[in-house]
Length: 115
Length: 116
Image (cartoon, rainbow over all chains, first blue to last red; front, side, top):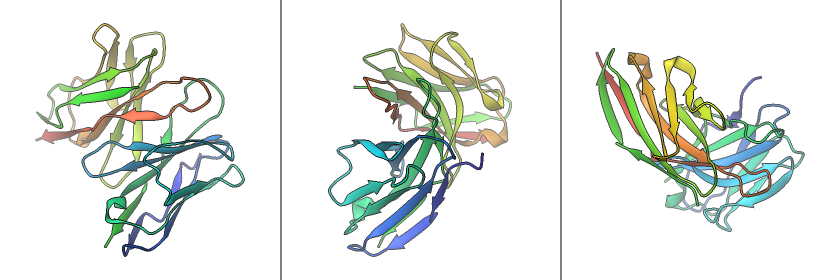
């Protein structure tokens, strides 16, 4: 169990640029979540994958956001045409697929800063 | 819809004193409840969880929480604070209305400061 890994840890970019983040969940975890955390707030749910299927997206996830999990392992989150309001910490979490409620294990996040 | 309210955005205690962090939830179905801790520039680490069964839940680092359905509360306590407990604490609720998505809804967090 090597934990959830996120890359990069920090990303600074100019407004209007596209960015992509990667998440490697704990191996054999079927469920993968993305959350966004802004300063002084708790994390907010963005989207959920069961294996490679994206089963739910929050209304927070505008058309500029897209997430994939092509082989049911790692996931990517892309933001196109970034805006100032996209500045936040983006957290990835994973959990096992069996059983009703399994705790979500979080990565250390990617902090995005928009200049 | 589920929601979480954490009373007190900042709690300050002396080392060795009791820690009490308050959490109230709203859920349309029996909830699953969690406390997570976050250190600066890190992700969230699970402290403890309540799913079913015993309402007093023990977690890591000496923390515990009690689920009180009548009060819709899940307060976090620790008898004696340590300097290393200084961090931000998040209460979260999860419910399932069908399917396999157990997304978490978090409170705004409580920053715990421990004074020597």
